Length: 174
Image (cartoon, rainbow, N blue to C red; front, side):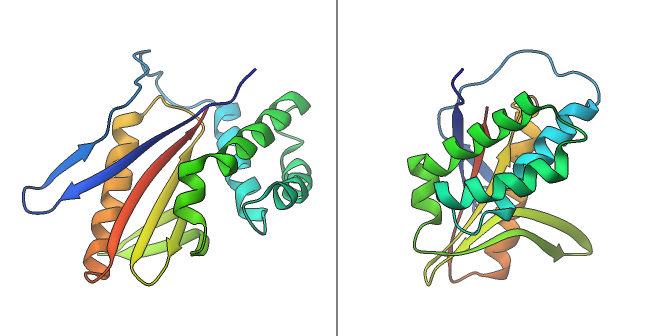
């Protein structure tokens, strides 16, 4: 079974208040109401795996896998834990992910308080000229909501750091 990663870069034109999104592959399957517990734990486990990795390389991910398995073994079976690791591996080896994270200061699971609301950024990557905000997803069931979420992050960061270029991406680790 192959794990795929789909990426949508979001570019916001603040003059026209429009989001322009590059070509996408969209799953037309109707959304199910609510989220099942397994899907929630699956997504949390992927985030935990990536957060526990010291760096985004195979050695660090292999070490982080131990922590992830210890934290989620009561909620997910071995096959699901193996699948999460495979998806994480595909993600860190994806060329656009590498491009957005390498040679940058990386901050994982960062809280962002703005205008009275608290947000949680999966990944924030900084260098002297650019900020990249990255969100990872384990399901493509809520694409419109995901795009709106990351577009909001990008808009907030552009207001906080007007002198830096702000990029945003959603990585679908499917």
